[in-house]
Length: 199
Image (tube, rainbow, N blue to C red; front, side, top):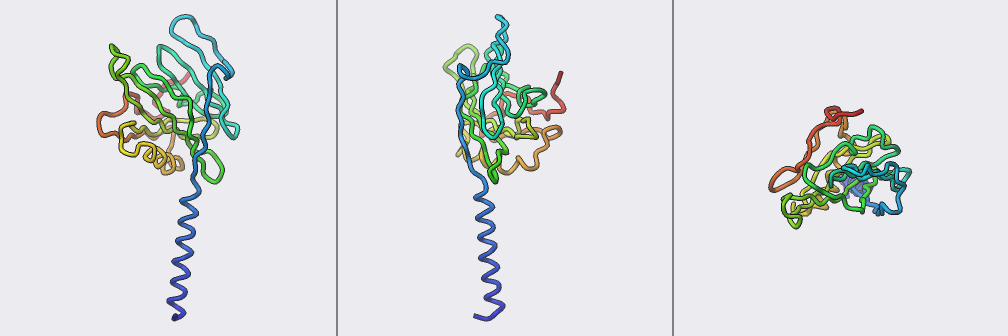
């Protein structure tokens, strides 16, 4: 084989190896939480507010859960203070799942994927849809950056792709969340963190 052709073949092989290694950098780790076993940080007020909890996650990250008026709020990080993801919930009655998929790159968590069940008819509790909420892990806090309808084709793969593609460049303060859906958009505020009220 001529030297130039051999060099080109070696280069192509190296590129393929690097590309394969890069694609293989991402993986998923799963954790579950049980509010009965989590640390309760706020008690119910006996009216609308149902309480807040801090649950164990991975790599020093906790899962922060609050509930009010039959709606859940979930965030991830080292603290729930000013944690953008915890300021958002679907407009309809909803409940968050208890299994978190942590998307990892080079051994570090970069995003989470959590499935939610959302009411589609307030008069009929049997009518609901599911959404996969993709949140970016951002310097000890988190923000919701993408939503995938449960009925969207290959929804789990779409959520993982969004996590892997967006986590590195998504700006929680200024970028608006996006979504994948063949029908309606998610019933949730599609605003950047800077547009949300913070105490």
